[in-house]
Amino acid sequence: MKLLIVEDEPNLSSIIRKGFSEKNHEVSVALDGTTALDLLSNHNFDVVILDVMLPDINGIEICRRLRAAKNFVPILLLTALGSTENIINGLNSGADDYLLKPFKFLELDARVNALSRRAGQIQKPNEIITIADLQINSKTKSVTRNGDAIVLTAKEFKLLHYLAINSETILSREQLLDNVWDINFDMNTNVIDVYINYLRKKIDKPYDTKLIHTMKGLGYVLKP
Image (cartoon, rainbow, N blue to C red; front, side):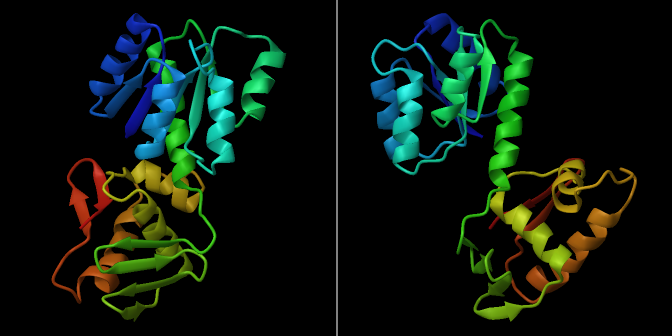
């Protein structure tokens, strides 16, 4: 993931940055709200970890400005203010989640991962996803490659779409089962492998460049 940490306490921001960097995420840090807004206007992030109490523009105001500008990047607020009123104020400003200080990094990591997963499932109206010469229209549920129409079943489309909105991200079988089938399958089932094979026959086999890749022991990834 590409993360932005907005935190004016250097020690805390350093700890958070180190934790996520060790998990191979790309991490940027802003020590104030002005820098954060500048970064957010010029770069795309998967999740923003945003402190409420900042020296210039507070986290609540940053949330409001981002949402007013139609920027719907997932935001996790960090706050030392644990009253119900403060939490509701933060969520109503556009934040997606909050975490009270002090906190354990493991919980922060879990919440960031959950925000990223949920964001990956949001579909925008008329959204067309393009990966190499593959185009996926989430409104019409249609797929083309190199201009050729490809007919998929409903489940094949859902699997392809989930791979596409998470393109270049390795997805485990468990993630695919949870997000495409929406039920608790026996993890020993080979349903994922079967449907990946179906997609390969339609998406990859007729073309020179393969887009669906197996990452041995990890899962699958859709990428050029």
